[in-house]
Length: 364
Image (tube, rainbow, N blue to C red; front, side, top):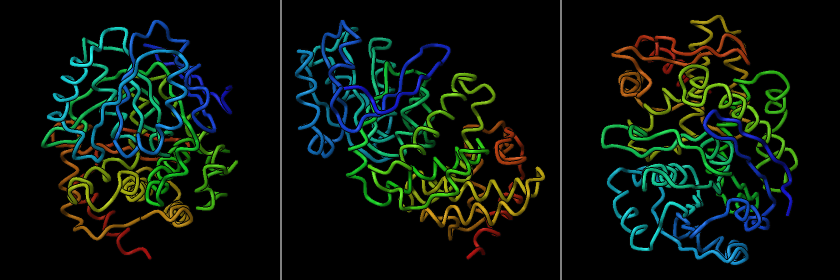
């Protein structure tokens, strides 16, 4: 079955397509294009296999390729380097070889983990992303950043490794709880701020009514978000410059996640809070129109996204020092000079971070 929409990703190391489908019909035909495939390994959570196996089993039976499911645990704490050994051993036990194909079926944690496994097993075997969350659909499944966590830092061990394809079944979004919708929408809002122009207006003109996998407006937001990221990846695959803009909001977000032991917020919710910190700093440091502070707050409220946190401002600022994008003891932020005009690697003092965080804590 032909996709509803298709976006071409032109990374330096590989070109591939993001296919948006209404459901899993067409997955088998997509896989056939990548023959020879000796075996397929679906890395997923057990609960996701329970939800979706009835859809993908018939598709995988079509090509006649033997396939196996390997269950991994979701959640950021399980995306740890120590969790990889059992998966490597399982692949060896089941006879995976250089012609095998790994399918990463799940959200961002599953995609990052499975992609890292694929990039390192036998020095790299093919894999594909099948995102089942909104956040993974518009962010982690696109662009080839794969990683696992260490005890003292998130995504500290990883690589750039592009998938063979991304297959996005919109029906998977129908299973999402409200929190997961918010998680993905924060990323869409981020892309709107970075893009500016018509896409930002689409983001501003909608609200949480798009939290519906059949929504035409949601489809347009997803496509616009993927197109923006595709454009960035095509220019800077390995994050040596321009791609750093995709970290807008993430410096504060990672600090909040670390400070709260990844329990208070989903990643997207933390990014939502971090976006407002970045916009406040942008108004103070880069001449962004201050009206965007209230403007962004209103956008976040429309999508039922958080925009402040009760953590102590000084502690949040201190935790930004652990961000892997920093150089020495300097905290580097992505800021906006105006919507659609981001600037990166801007050094910010800890007190400036704490001050901005205090200001958003006072916003109602």
